[in-house]
Amino acid sequence: MFQFLSSKSSFTFILLLIGGSLGILGYAQLNLAPFAWEFKNFLIGQNLNHGFRLYQDIRDNTGPLTANFFQLLDFFSISLFWNAPIAFAIVVFQAYVFQYTIRRFDLMPPMGNLPFFIYLAFFHSSFELFIPSGAILGLSFLLLAWREIIAQQSTLLVNDRVFLIGVYIGIACLCYLSYSLFIFWAILSLLFYSSINIRQILLLVIGFLMILIAAGLVFSYHGNLANFLEVYQTSSFRFQVPSLVDIQALAISMGPSLVLGIIGLFRVIQNNKIRSNAQKAQQTNLIWVFISCITLFTVPALRVIHVVFLLPSLAYFTLNIGYLFKVYWKKELLIWTLLGSIGWSLQSEWKNQDVQRLGKAQLPLRNEKLMVLGPQLQEYQYNQMVGPFLNWELSKSLFTELDQYKTIVILHDYFSRESPSYIYDPEQNFVKMIPLLPNWTKNYQLVAPNLYQRKN
Image (cartoon, rainbow, N blue to C red):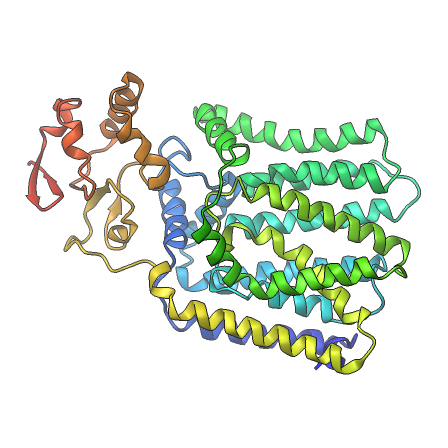
C-alpha cells in the first residue's frame, strides 16, 4: 500500500479520487438525518433568500461568506443530499494545495501521492467532516496563505505578494470568524523565518484589514454593522474554557490524527538531518499549532467540525513518519494503522450518531409559519421559520435579561416584523413576555402544551 501511495503516477491520484467519490456518494445514499448545525446552515441560506439580514434578522455566529455560500446553495435548490459531495470536493482541493506545496518547495523527499492521501484520510476521520461548514470553507484560504508563506520563506528576499497572505486570511476569517487569530501566525512565521521588513508586514496587515473593512461597508449599507461587530468580537476574541466532556469527545473523534501527529512531531525533533526549507516549514507548522491551541478557546463549541484547523498541521507532522522510518514494513504499518484507526473512530461515531443528528419533529404542524423559542430546530423541517432565533445559545440570553429596557425594545422589533401562525415555547419564555409586550402577546392563545396559535 505504501509503495502504491508513494507513486508519482497520475493513475494513483485518479484512483484515489474515484474511490473517495464512490465512498462519499454511497454515504449520501444512506439518507441519514442531517446534523443540527447542518440543518441550521440550510435555514440560514433559506432565510437570506427570503430577504432576512444576517446577525440582525438571524441571530447566529456563522461567518458572512459561509452564510452567503449556503444562500447560494439554496438559491440553486441544491438539497442536503449534496452536502457530502460538496464537502469532499472542498477537501480534495485542500489536499491538492497541501501536496502541491510540499512538492513545489521541496519540503520533503519525493513522496508521490502520499500527502494527498493522508490529508484526505484525516479529513474523513469523523462523520462531521463529511459536511461543509464555515471552518472547512475558511481552511481552504488558510492553506493558500500557508502556500504563500512557504514561497516567501524559500527565497532570499520577501516580495510584495505578502499582501495576498493578508487577503487570504481575511477571507478565511469571514468564512469562520475564529480564524482572525491566524493573522498572528502569518506575521510570526514571516518575521522569524524570512527577511520580511516593516513595510511588508504593514502590507500583510493592510490586506487582512481591507477584507474586513469591505465587509463592514457592506453590513453598514444594509444597516446591521453594529450586529456584525458584536458577533465578530464575541466569536473571535471572547475566550471560554471548554468542558471536560467536550475535551474527551474531541479526543475520541480526533484520536488517530492527534496520536500520529504527535509521534511525527517527536520524530522531527529527534532528527537533525532535515533540509533548510523543511526546517522552516516545520517551525511554521509549530506556530500554526500554537495559534490553533489559542483559537480552541474561542470556537463556539469544542467539536470536530469547529477545530478542523488542527488537522493540516497534524497531517504534515504525520508525513514525517513516512520518510523518517527507514524500514519498509514500518512505513507499510503506518498506512494500515491510519486506516484502521479511522475505521475505529467512524464506527464509534456511528453507534452514537442519533445523539448528534436532528431528531424527528414533535409538532403535528405542516406548512405553517412557526416560531420556536428554544433549540428545537427539527420543528422547522416541515414548516416555514419565522423570527431570528436560529442559534438558541445566542438568543436565550435575551429572555434572561427581560428587566432591561434595551432587551424589550429588541424583542418588540423582532416580533413586530412578521407574526407567526404558531409559537412553540418549550422553555416557557412566552409567559414572561405577556406583561412586557401585551399588545403583541394578546393575539395568541394556548392550544396545546407549549404551543400558541394566532387568533383569527
